[in-house]
Amino acid sequence: MVVERAARTSAPGLAINLAGNGVAAFAHLGLSDRLNKVGQPTRRREYRSSGGTLLFEINEDEFWGPHARPRCVRRSDLLAMLDMQHDDTRRSAAVESVRPRDGGAEVTFVGGQVERYGFVVGADGVRSVVRGSVFPGHRSRAAVVSTAAFRIMAPNPGLDCYTMWSGAGSTFLLIPVDGDEVYAFASATGGGQVDADPSWLDRTFVDYPEPVKAVLAYARHHREVLHHSPIEEVRTDEWSRGRVALIGDAAHATAPVWAQGAALAVEDALALAKVLSEGDWDTAGVRYQQRRRERVQHVQVMTDRFSQALALPANVRERNMAIAGPKAYHEVFGPLRDGRAWR
Image (tube, rainbow, N blue to C red):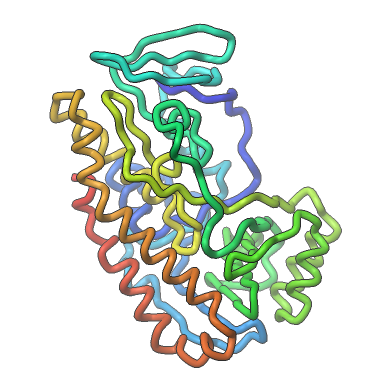
């Protein structure tokens, strides 16, 4: 039984950047052909100064290979692809609380209905109701990189690769979803504030190069494409209790600097399915957590490290990026090319 807070007839008009390990996880589910029909592969990355100077670049095609090539896809397309996998076991309902019980877990829905299940998986995001019920002391926190960000969908200003510009206290990322549209992520660095007022964008990125200005000019006249939201992280040593387990952002949300939110969530699902198939559901949550802990901690450490690097003075960061940037990329993603974490 899949329980959603609301019937999903539509999806937010944003995009998801799937790193290579996430693409590999979808391939393990037999979804490669469907995934290849949506979005656009990310073959190359460029990291630039706020003035446009190229600091370093990464050949993602070469690093990941054709079977795990990163991809930026619209959320609506990805959700539609996943919906095709479901039968009539989807249910629209809001969960109020979850309590582990001997041999299962008790779920209370908004409205008072109580049902019992053999195993409950909380995949309900950074502000997880399941986590709040089972681990009430484990709350989300502001990310190291920034307290919030703007996410934008806009016409493609002519980019053909993942491009990040970073200056003093700010960073702006553009990823082509296809030839017609780009996904933008704009935030502060060094834990800075990001005002919900869109004028923050114009003030912060006034000296950034033309591709950024083109996207902001479009957003200025199409406010509906602007999405302001907090960047929150979840750091907890407990992802399971009895026959209740957390996966994805509910267990270990991190700032999206390495595009690991969706990727780790799909890996979590594969790993948990594997341990459940092995039997003994009373210990499945613990075994799942043991299997996933090292990989998730690796991403968390690398996320903090890159977030701290973005907070360095611009002249110091730019002077070292030619060597430190490619090294950081390989340190982050090298271990993630190994899919044994879910097997």
